[in-house]
Image 1 (cartoon, rainbow, N blue to C red):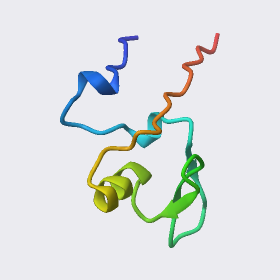
Image 2: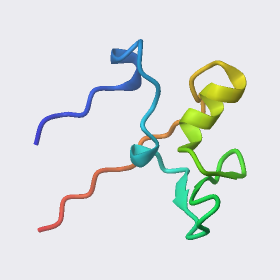
Image 3: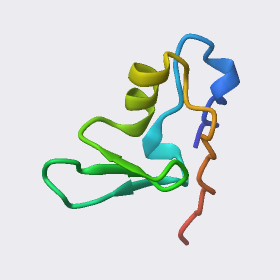
Amino acid sequence: MPDMPAVADQPNRGPNCWQCRHFAITHIPSSPYACRSMGFQSRLLPSLEVLRVDGQFCRLFLAKEITIKA
């Protein structure tokens, strides 16, 4: 399995919420995504919402641990 590039390796792209430990699915149709670290729910992915509101990439991204199932 190839290594995932670090966020620093992609200067023009923000973090991917799907690979973040803080990302959550709420199962609420009007705001299906959440960021546990920042404590908000959104219709957009949290990293996109942060970029839209703050104008900067999310700084709280924490990569999930990769588990290999045998």
